[in-house]
Length: 235
Image (cartoon, rainbow, N blue to C red; front, side, top):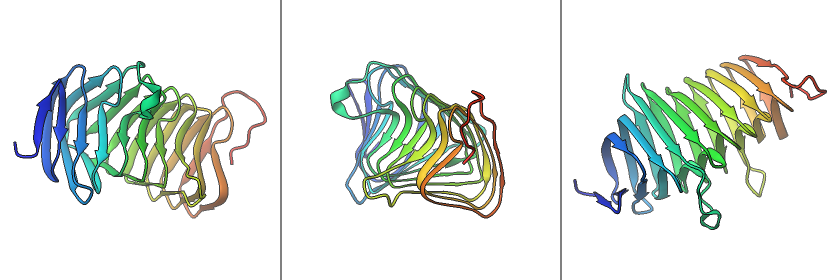
């Protein structure tokens, strides 16, 4: 349709608007490269996308991209380990602009190279079942991560969810939901962490929650179970 085309096995989205993705892409990428003021919505309607050597879903440019898992659907996005380090793309889902994940379905993200989900700006996860695995961080954002009414299951070689930038204005906000980090070095990490609710269970090797500046806990149920039996703190 208008704004979408296929070239050399990759799917390109070049205009703002809503697009429906379904079916299988065995070794290729979905690439969003729209005008910088464009809002792009991708409805994931039972997809299986795999790319062996770069991000399977790459947002090169947009104002904001929204990934919506259609109700009662299972969607899997995965990548191999043969990335080109010089490209600086280091996630199975990699976005240079604001990214939102939502919907009544399930999104599985499986990475064999560095991170699962990477967002260079603000990341929102709401009303979604998200399962992600990665050898380093499962969720990695530069500016912020905000979570509400999501069911999240993560397995990480390093951090479960981390937010970091150069000027220490990064923050994480959890309003509600159910978050389980089954394996990680540290669970939640940001300069500023605020938790207003939800159920959070973390199995870290080191700290469960690590705030470099400010941590505010107003509600919720938080459990940190150290897996190594060392002297790491819950907070």
